[in-house]
Length: 86
Image (cartoon, rainbow, N blue to C red; front, side, top):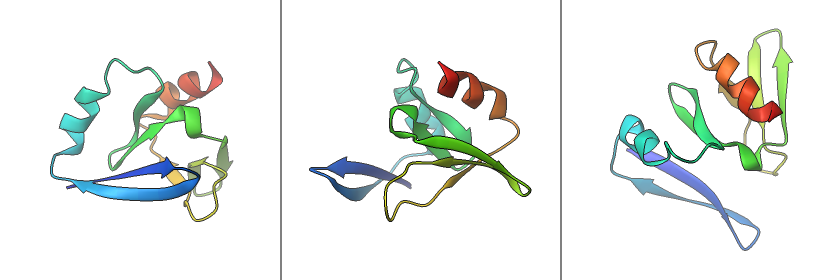
């Protein structure tokens, strides 16, 4: 299952999709701002506020109350950095 989180009229909502993350990633393949940042997460970088580095890793922050920071794994760090800086 994949949990999709989105904003609807200023509120953060989510729904569950019966699919794999790998198949979901293929669906967003042509959209440059949506990409995987961790084996468990795909992020739309149009909604990312900042990327921060801490002693225990790199995290993506959305700047939205109630939405936790997501980790960025070392596998995806270079592509995430390029996407966010562009």
